[in-house]
Image 1 (cartoon, rainbow, N blue to C red):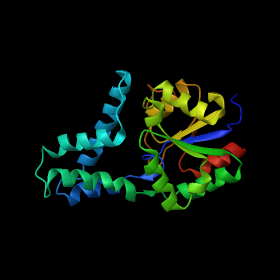
Image 2: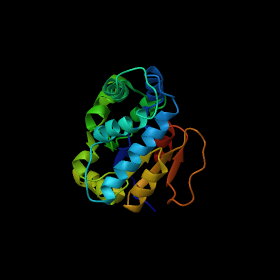
Image 3: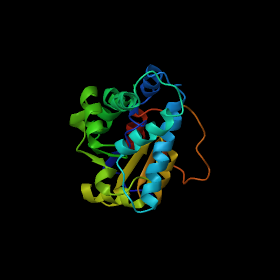
Length: 224
C-alpha cells in the first residue's frame, strides 16, 4: 500500500508538451516529417548513453548534433545551421496537450505539490507553462542538467526527491514514456502512466501504479 503522494513529478517533453509541431518544422526545411520521430528517439538514446558512461551532455547540444547527422543525409532547402536552429527553436513555441491545463489545476486544488523533472532544459518548461497560463501551479522546474544524470537513471529521481525534501515513496512520477515509469518505479517512486493513444504497456518494464487516458483522471483517482 503506497502512502498518499505529497509531490507530483511531471515529465515534460511529450507528457505535457504536444511535440507534433516539431514534425512540421522538418517539413518547413524540406525534410521528411517522419524524421522528427527518428531524431527525437536518437536524441534520447544518446542522452541515456552519456549517463551510463558517466559523462554529461545537455539536451539542446545532443539535439543540435543529432540534427546535423540526420539532416546531412537528405536534401534540405536551407543552410544546415539555419535548418538546425529552425527545428530547435520549435521547442519554445510548443503548446501543452488539451488535457493538461484542467489536469494541473485539479491536482493543484487537491493540495498537491507540483514539480517537473525533465531531460530537457528548465527554461523550455518555463516558457511552455507560462504560455499555457499554469506556471504558477508549479513549485519548481527541475532538469536533469542539474542532476548530472539523465532519466531513467536512479540518480535523477533521487535528485528530485532531495530538492523537494521528501522521501522517494512520497513522490508520484507522471509520464507518457514507459521507460520513465520503469526508471521511477525502480527508484522507489509511485508512478502514473498517461496513455493517450491506447498502445499496450511493454511487459518487460515494471508496470505503472496508475494508468489514465487524460491528466484530469489522475486527480479523480487520487481523491478516491
